[in-house]
Image (cartoon, rainbow, N blue to C red; front, side, top):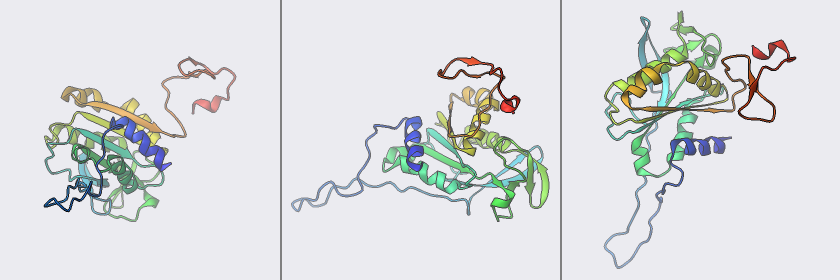
Amino acid sequence: MRNIIVILLLLIAGIVGKRYFLLSPIYEDKNLSESIYIVKPKQHRYLVRDMRYRFTINSITAQIPYASNMMLHEKHTDVTRLILAIHSTSYNPDTYLNNSLSLLGNDTVLNRETLIIAPAFYRKDKSNLSDIVTWRVSPFWGSSQALYKGKKITLSAYEILDDILTYIITSKRFPNLSDIVILGHSAGGQLVNRYAASNFIEETIALKHGISMRYLVMAPSSYIYFNGERVRRGTYDEFIFPFGANKKYND
């Protein structure tokens, strides 16, 4: 599964076919004063245990953990691409950061140009961190039944995604950003599917700043539909109402 995710990431990030750098000397000539090396770039990994994204939404000031390859409060003029990676019910954003970094490999330019953020949306029984927002039920479908420092608050993961994207686009810390890819696998794919259908950030902020947004939904157990039609069996682009189907199909 990890290899599939990496391949898909390569495809959507548009970097298949790029030349990758070697990790060892190309050659070593005793007659030359020095060897020729292609340098491996330094890949930073700022992990969940150390990182917090702080926000104020609807008068609620709180924070969530996240993993990233860059410090978000610093200016990064080289960044042109954002990969926003949403974890599944394995609740492992660090792994999603590492998988995303693996696709960048040893390409110095790609590592410089690509910002990766893997936010952590934890159900309350999946984290022992006391300083973060968690959810009383699974947050992937947009639940706003959240907790912060032992108190109930009304806040969804979708609102936090809105805030993260707004910050990245408008803070002027990433002035050359031109492409955003939001991806999710399994439960994370369900979140991305629903976020793609419901967010206003793409229309009201991203496009106005000349930034494209793409969504990669991988292996979700359910999809959002806008009406009762479903794909006709044996086709990919024909939709019908499934008469005679169990009434619960549309739940």
